Length: 231
Length: 231
Image (cartoon, rainbow over all chains, first blue to last red; front, side):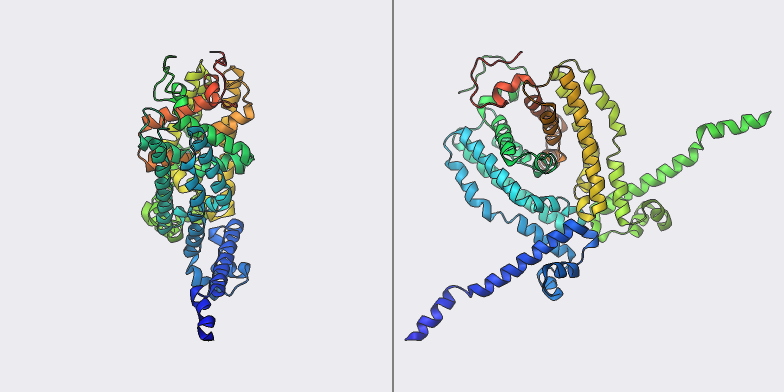
């Protein structure tokens, strides 16, 4: 019968058009909230002004965001929706040498910071606005820390990590030196190109994590010339 | 006559007791605002709640801060009142070797970040709250950049700067890698001691700015063994 032919596709795709529309409206509201926040700041924006900016009914903005704090939470969630970066991150452990590994890590962070810069920039101080948002920001920080730990564990497993450097310290350093504040100052304020920034990140990660640099940047000061590592 | 004897001391000291009291009240209000911001966040605090916390009349808080945004501006100004660090900063160019110079720069930043951590932490996102506060934050950023430029110029004048590194790039790097976000992640989140953090800053500044590391961390990749710099 033709009934099956008619109904099956609908059920299999979970009404894609409606889902797409809802997703699109939500995106429009979030983008409008980002623009309002940039232009007016948190103190002067309102859910009504977001609705006007997005060209949707105020009711819809209230349904999506609930409150002004909620609007910030939606922006924060959308900025840190890290799933889209998982694929690139997954390519990191496929790199066979330490040099290639740190270069890929640097490219990954450059790309993520480039794409999320305006979000990171706006969200830097979400925690100042309310304790709930501080929790969200903290959760995101911890998620990024966990992902850093994974990458460092994989390096350690491949025998690439600097001799004498613990996985814990290496993770702390990798995480700290990929803080958005560095991108902010070099690229957003000082106007460095993405290429120059990525090269700089590669140099720093190499210095912090790989053995070749140990005689200059390792744990000891004034180390002798006989310590050439295992290169 | 005795008139002169009576009035002169008063005029010479500009009524120190009153000035001291005014300063003390202002400090109490700022500290109360910091606590309120930490506890409740910007969205939930008020000038009245600051007055209660400080134990002063609401009228006094209104006179000092003007508005909620004004309270944040007062905190920001007090955090970034950099004069108190000028003395330590002035000792930097007295260091006669590059090693001592970067170690002093690291100690200086550790101390400043340690003392201003809660202020920096709260102020990270002042710019999100209103465009006026964003301007204040930007001014502070630029002031710190200018101070970094001074230190780097002094290093260059003493012939300490890495060969081939421009004063501009060196300043960008020195400024970027002393961003509070690194202190935040290593010390505030990961619990590094001040000593460990200061050692880490010294290693990074040495790597970024001094010649001895050029063969590992300089502009070229895979540099040969004959490039030993001028050590």
